[in-house]
Image (tube, rainbow, N blue to C red; front, side, top):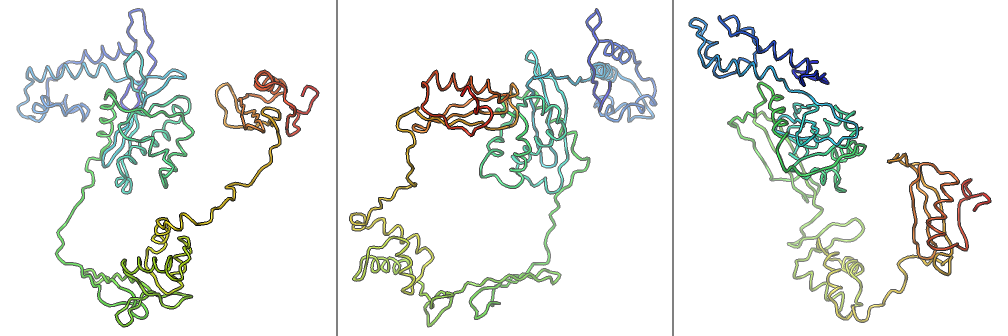
Length: 441
């Protein structure tokens, strides 16, 4: 069966060891005679006319001569056509490899199966990037190639373990807790598949992926045209649009007269040569220089009326005195940490970091709590439930995955994991489920 220029079939091997379809195709191709006139090459596929040796003979319509070099190239072409590339069929449960290739305007991927050290292609995927996608970083383009492959080949991704071979930190980008935007969406979409990320140590089928994206490129890819600017833009920063002239304005005018305005309001005021900061509920706050801010910290913290306050309270007291600088909170905390007197005589907090809880069990492994969790997404062996037991004294935990939450399973877990290892407990705390509310327990 032919599909997209590739021969896809499960070969029927006769006694001779050669497939019937391949033998018939090879015999018909190799029996093709050499061209004797110009009309024969014109019937060939346009891709075949790109052979360098045959191109000259084809273009010479008036003086068409079939040379020995043309005959040699023609024989090589027939040999190549008689052995078309075959798409392989994966076996159930087999791990598959995927190679990814990206460029500025296209991405491609090839799905591979490896058997006896030989890699055989299964399917090819390629896509021309849209305008916005062309501006993605390289690592995002690689992730896009993987997500496109998963969308177009869901049967393979859902029934096989896919090994992603790449030289980029793709797993770190998709699994990073700081990821946001499209990376999070892609990570969630790929989370349903069994993906493994391994470094690209050998090229092998990577050349095939690179070839696919080269065939995907547009015939006339969009070019970035940079023209010389003859008429300049005018930028003005003089003047202000804020109330009381306590701001700044930027005006940008294009050569066509289009005006862009942007204003900033600082909420600062200059009074008799001194800079003040405006406040909603307090009077004007005098802005201090770095040398003045250090003196203010020393005077308020350990001066005549100093109380060796903490960092946050020290900053608030300086603010109420009518002074301000941008980093006063940070500077006040650092200043109090370096104060020797405060470190020696400051009151220590003896309050526990967490609320006190009473100990229900007086000795280890005397009282256990047991419960059932699930159902969860089905794992191997159709296991989708978890039975958990926790000791009230030591917080020791025993857990086991189950395919079914029957009475026999719960009794077996309790006997093997609790009784046989820690002895018979004094009490067992459960939720009175039907698996626990019976004569056996």
